[in-house]
Length: 400
Image (cartoon, rainbow, N blue to C red):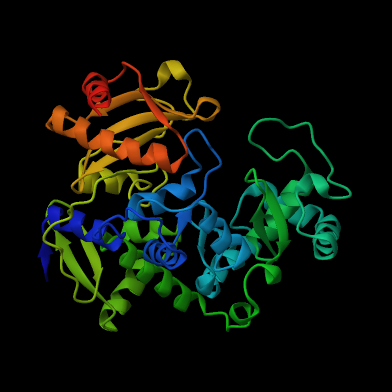
């Protein structure tokens, strides 16, 4: 059995995620965005626009400069990507849709949010009415339904029974989602979103789907433990270990060891760790590199928690903190806000990880902040004096 060092695992992960190449100084082309999506397999969506909506950042981190309207064109005009519930609300290549039907079948059996299943079982005629209305009038927002059935609920929950019905129909694959100018959900029939020739493909068996999803997860991570593999698309199965063993017997994957992991890991057949990864970039809190916190700690020795939902007084690093990767290591983090009315990217706080040189990290981080500011349409950068890197980062800004 091959044994990799943890450093090899890090390089394999970054290479598999598309960080081996150089970022471009010109605007990337649609085919380059599609290649990055095919590498990651899935991109998590998030509505928080404090810097820029999260789904745009993984492409920027890997490619550099590109026109964000290309994302919208590929996903919602040309229908090459589609929204689905796989590792939270996400978007993935439409060509892969047949293998995600497994998740929709499970949702129909109740493996989804309790409130959605209750609406489906307790209000079947209403759900049918909502579906028929979308077929006639879609795409529609929940508030555009003729009978949305508003509730008194506030906060993060659904504000109408109609919203629950639409979400249920989305989870089971009857409807899909397009997005409006402000990221609002517009529901339409799945046949108007995923191309007909893909929907017409045979539905794989559960075993075929699981093996394909597990293989894609391994491909996207380079080397991964059984738990990592299940987490990538949030797919549970009591037969995971048996299926992974079958995949090795079929010659699709290999069992390997990674020093310090204390568990069996898996790679695609015949992979080699690159000698060097030199990528430097800011990472979205929802980047595939970041979202599995235990794996992040294991591979990069980097502790990260999303603090958006904490009261300001209880946040350690800030509201919307982007990890900073330099030469393939995560060496810092920065709390950012896009002040659109004054065209300013504000650095609320900046931090250097222990054992890294603050001067070198600040220099590299400033370069990335300059690129990010241009990407999100900011003409200036303001650095506040919070965090152990802020003073040095401010010096870099003054010397720029």
